[in-house]
Length: 185
Image (tube, rainbow, N blue to C red; front, top):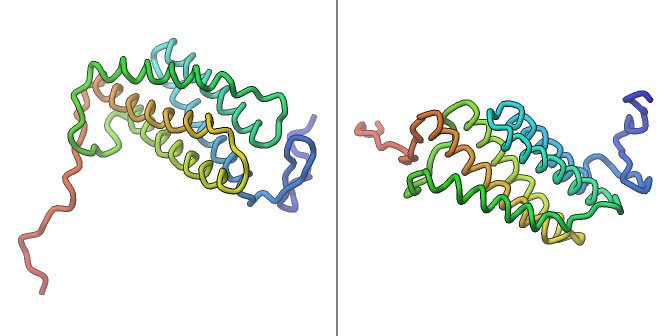
């Protein structure tokens, strides 16, 4: 089977069930962003040294495919497992947080390269969450999806902090805009 079908050459794509929609429709935008998020999760998994974390991130990738496919009309998608995955994320967040100093200020995204990539993944996840909430104003979206995405972004924030701690990279606290002593002339 060829990778190209030419059916999308005019700017439309097929949903599950064969319905054709424009590639710029909000639903397509959401699951396109889910695909981007999934790619970044895969990037983090590929670089992460812990096999346990790799497997967990691969399970998240599978969840994201199920979410996107379900939103695109796949009738066999079962989102019942999302609640359990949210609980698993919360347990991992709590475990990582135990070894970290409490946050008293905003921190700048960055640090070790893998931590910076986790921050990118977090911000993409937040965008997907916003897009999903917007779409939910126009069509029915399973509420578990928004909860899942919200917790997933929390997980990547904590993962970035955890990586920086493991790599002995100090987090940079946001200070705001420095005031200049020079007056404008």
